[in-house]
Image (cartoon, rainbow, N blue to C red; front, side, top):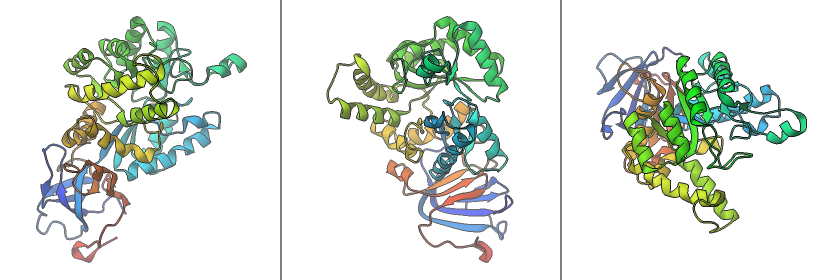
Length: 415
């Protein structure tokens, strides 16, 4: 289908990302890759538009996942070409789930996500729009030092490591030179760290300030991987734009984030998977604060605290740490921890677009880019509807469709 194709989308209800509920009986006219009209179809202006009937479906703005990992980190010892190719199924899966924009927060050795961003923009491969942080900057032995044993045995290090203010500034500038949209750094350890513990602190306040300042000087925002409260506090005080996970952030720290306009990307579904794995390995072991198992229980309690806070929560999943096709499950996870469906849907649309500074994304209104997803059912009353995608439109093109019923065409056209 050409970029100039016009479509008239006719779902059961339309949610534009701004209102509190879907509007019944509205059509969406798309022309030239942009939304032209939302409401009753304008008479005589759409004779050549393809009518796409979506009975029983709710049409939403294209979704945004603010925390994914596209190339397979486990293929880091393979060639860069092969590792890049491992991202293609992930991109297809995310697009089929209705995610038309993603932020890839790095983790592999080379800036492969920057190349993928360009390939999507140039139409070489099909996938969501990509914003890229090429790598996670980490201290040696920290969360982003992916194989410290290789350094010990062969002098080879996998990961973007930097210690001290001077090295940190150089690494930030290298990321800028590689074409970064974002700078990401490890403020703490993590549950998947090869060496440090999830509650270990990575950078001193001085190092954290220098890193964020170097990014700011280059005009780039920072995202920090941070689990313990002190790591979150250091990053927030330094001026990061988003905190990834924030898994053990205290109530006072969440309130500080809200006051300073720092976004939280909680990746709760991923944490639920971690907690379940640890529980299977060692049922009921360890109090909170003693070892990974105890920390996981603390994270479980903190997830409810995050939802109850006033912090701006943007949707992000850490897809790649689990199969990409499951990233939609962040929606029911957030709702299970107390978030309303409306807030969860806004987290993946207007709030995520605000975090990523994408004024043309996150809404489905006239004049904006035509990224949209149709789901079977009403996610405002049944959030599991987000796992029943029937149509995905990216820049005015239908890139995924599961037919739930017959399709008709205005003017006798259908393709």
